[in-house]
Image (cartoon, rainbow, N blue to C red):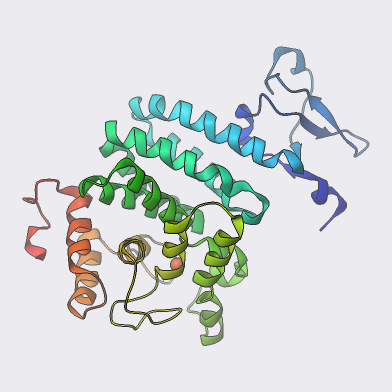
Length: 319
Ligand SMILES: [Fe+2]
Ligand SMILES: [Fe+2]
């Protein structure tokens, strides 16, 4: 790690507007990092306009404060943006925010995540369709973060459809968001490989549930449901899953197993494989339900939660 990155973090442009209460720094022409603005001043304050700055930095120890400020700012704008029907803006900001939260998960950033999901869950009750549409907006650059945000939106849709309490919706939404956290410790070239993986590479990928479990445990926060979800989302009820091949899977593990699979196959995440239409994806997963790999009731509720609140629409022939 360079001397520079030990002390300073480069700020993401999309979050900078929320950093009013944090000191911002920039690099002067001599290459030294110096103060750009003090606490209590906006980065676009008139008095700073004369400075041309391309990259802003924060001190490493201010990271959690910054994340909290960005998450609070996002939550404050959430309802406004949703009411404006601007789902793409909401998703874009959310992805940037989550990307920053999940990068270096051991540095304290996760501390602020439950509050963020709670805010999303609260707005869900007033605007369910719009938040559900979050999962449908696709980005050409498909990453673990985008996958995680999609799984979160689908999971919260499932929770609302099945009448979960706000607390459970928050817990399952958070678990969905963090289910692949262990992938932050898998080499990026394996995760983004533009080809089928070798057996050895796949063995490495299979370590991500246990890695996620360990990271979440080590935070010391009360993340019981997210811990189960991270560890069990690749387990199957017939024992054919990983890492343990267990058949006694928590409810969260069973829900995330189905939704994770659905999200992955309906998204064009690998150039050598094309995305499947929702109904085809559901039929494929249904085959695994018949084989005893997934819970039937959860699968049916999830399928209905996608479009059909009244159980009368286009997915009725599936069951
Ligand atoms: Fe996973
Ligand atoms: Fe996943």
